[in-house]
Amino acid sequence: MKLNPQDIVTLLLPGSGQVLVWSIFLYLIFFFAVIMLFSMPDKNMLPTLLVATTLLFAIVAKLSVSATSVRGGKPIIANKDFGMFVINVGMIVLPLIAVGMTRARKNKTVGPAIIVSLTAAVYFFMFWLIAQH
Image 1: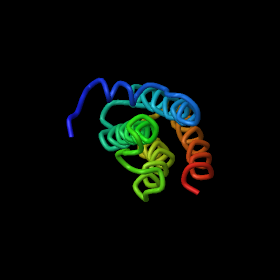
Image 2 (image 1 turned 90 degrees about the vertical axis):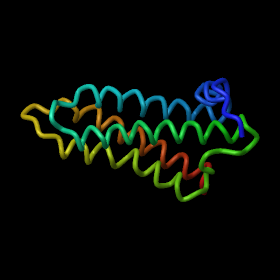
Image 3 (image 1 turned 180 degrees about the vertical axis):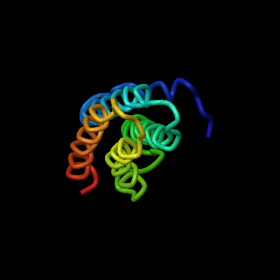
């Protein structure tokens, strides 16, 4: 299989129909996770890696959801696979674990972490109800 950069760009675009809804949620999760990542204090390696994993999960979910409609139904991880379930749950749980592990007197990452987790929870339950059920 040839990997074309144009295909990756096409998969990262919002899309249309139901893919657009999933894309908006995943863009929000990614955006607030980046804010959370940049507001992490120094010397917090494990929480930083957990937030980076959340970013990776959002990218993999976006590529998989978009590939269902763009590439003719050959995603990285299919919508009903257990791996997609783990990715969706990870986007909910990992930011909260990262905020709990962050060592700082004034933790500026609590707000973005709650937003990421709530957005991921809404995405998870909608995705489960519509695409995985």
